[in-house]
Image 1 (cartoon, rainbow, N blue to C red):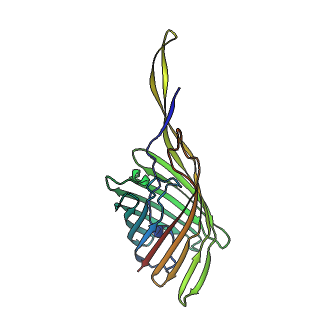
Image 2: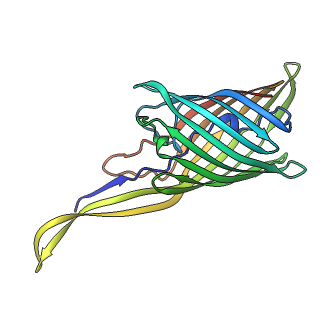
Length: 275
């Protein structure tokens, strides 16, 4: 009996600007306009990559009003094959917190517009929606969240993490430096199918074979990640640098690896301005 495992398109982790996911150190106003650009040194889905090892550059802009926000990213990719425009993303949501600011949360929805011929593992995702929350304290801040990713099927994800922030005021006379060592675990569904040849019998006599396919989905740990965001804020400007090391888990493979998923070091960087 021959068995072959083929992957359904995964609902892949969407590319959202690091500058939107990391709070700036600029004081918040009632209405805030944000613009800037970000960079990702190695696009990946929980450590899973393709052979192109694409990098991304994404200018972004957005507006926040009393917790409501709308952001857009224009994504350009570079790899061994091409340098080209790849996608535009829209994300809207609502950020909320208690009066002390130590409990925070976010509800969001996103839509992704990839070009027809783009070759990225993220491009199967069409929409995403989710919720996340955090408890910020001086000892160990705790984060968690869940989301749904929509393509031709729906996949679900979740994450949990901790960090500790070190803040240094009056850097360069006026600037603020925040260094935040972090550890996260990511979970999600993986959809795949198993196909094998099954012999057909007539009165116990083999008369041929037929292909049989079984569809499956499982929710499991996708990766562990260690990172250390570094934010330098000066006036209306924030510079964000995040080196990260991701350790993929539960990689589906058969007849040779169908997903490339070695431990991976990558970096995201962004510069943003809040007005």
